[in-house]
Image 1 (tube, rainbow over the protein chains, first blue to last red):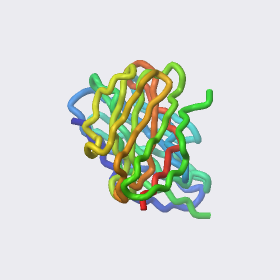
Image 2: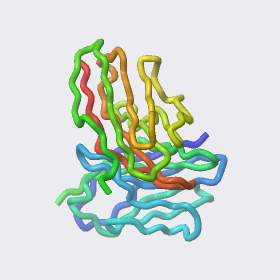
Image 3: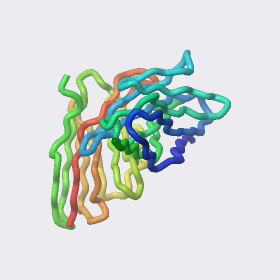
Image 4: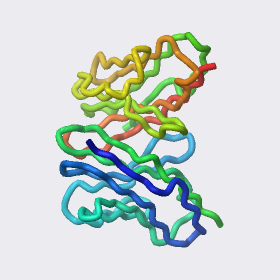
Length: 113
Length: 114
């Protein structure tokens, strides 16, 4: 079975500061990893995905994530955040023969001016 | 591309009533997923279909919940009878063929059962 752990439920940060949102996964098969963002009253939008190849993945809005197989992690980073990045961020995993996507519990990023 | 379309956006109903949520996936996508989001449990996968066939319904809470996909462009999630604990935001998502294809989400239906 696959699972995802997002240890931080909330991350407060000042505008223009760097941020890292942590994600660890557990899987017995090769995985595909995703980060999604959810703005208030909206559905989830794909930020970036790792399927194979380069372990550093770049996504939209200046976000990037690094796949680390030995540490089973897929942390999300941004060097300088904006107020508009305030949202809920979800890490997710799928793999094996299934299309099923398992989500973490989410991290609320709050950017202050 | 209009994206995944869900209706209604909001539904308020009384306990015991039947509720039907609707979803139109993105054209060409062959997998469809129903998720439920609550503060307490986060995002839970209820059921997913592949080529209109239910593949995994292990997340469906109980017999009061049922889902159908009569064709590639339409799916419903029905709750009968509804209970206050069913109050949540229900999301539909679809994905294209191929391993690792990302999910595209609708804007959800906010269900309130009083």
